[in-house]
Amino acid sequence: MSVLAPTPVPSHLDRSTAGFGHRIAERRRLARQDRMAVCLAELHSARALLADAATVVEAGWIQDGWFAYRDEQGRQRLVGAHNLSEITGRQLTGACLVGAIVHAGGGVPAAGSGPVHQALNLTWQALFAVTEPVEHCLSPAARTVRVRELTRWNDRPSRTAGEVTTLLGAAVRVAVSRVDRARSLTGGVGV
Image (cartoon, rainbow, N blue to C red; front, side, top):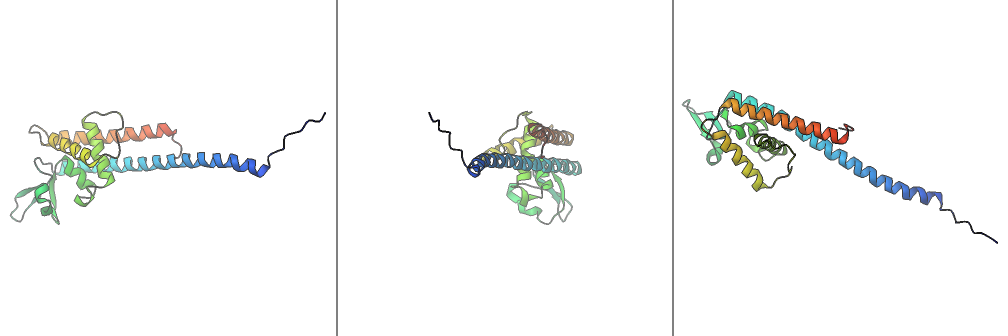
């Protein structure tokens, strides 16, 4: 009686099949690590931007406008959406909460940038005590709603500059907690 032994698979086929799965898994791991590194970089940038925004508020905080400047007669002028072009080339003398974040992020031309959006989102989360991370890429409509909520909060008649800087400090702490959480999820490896 003759027993047929199975034909062995050539070693180069065995390695390539196992290697393919390993390469796919490694690519996925590296992609996750890259996304995490980008997220951490954005959070660090937003944290620094928020600290700079607090300095802007401390230098001159306003309500009922986004920015303020002194005109040629020395009068303070408020700037909002309707007259935003007036601040071009002028030294700011004040900013509201949102204006301070925009200014710290690079000014009006940078208002649509990722770091400014991230800082506004973190500030909104701090204001409403949102403890879980929320959607990173908000729709323009959702961003507009959040900016309006921050603006309404800033413009409340009883609001003080101290409360605004306290909120910015809370937003910095939210950013730090997001960094810590991201690091704990990855075990601190590669981030």
